[in-house]
Length: 131
Picture (cartoon, rainbow, N blue to C red):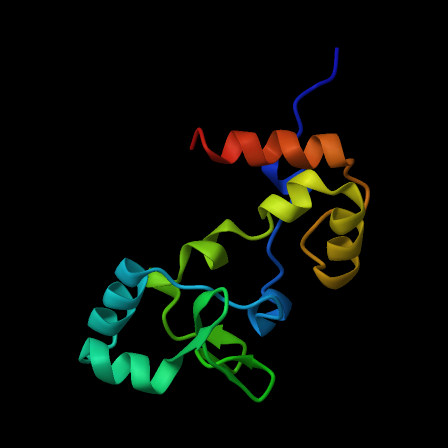
């Protein structure tokens, strides 16, 4: 029988900040905007004018100098209230559905174990939901 893999085997964040480039768009929900604005002690309208842009797929955080506007010195200003899409990394739907997308992500993210199989990755994603 296969022994269950530990979370650390599949993914251990190296704090490299690569996922914070937001290449696919860091999409935000209204409640996330509200939480980030409150965290920064800002008016929601002002927060949106400064940090949010609309796109055909929905509202997303602005990019500055090639990375998310909230990244500074490789640290996230809004880490405690960061959007769901950020907290979800690396267990994004596309990586769970497409084995070759996982292989591509392994090349970009040093936190994903290059030796883990797609099945192990999916199993760990499922375990995330139980925590």
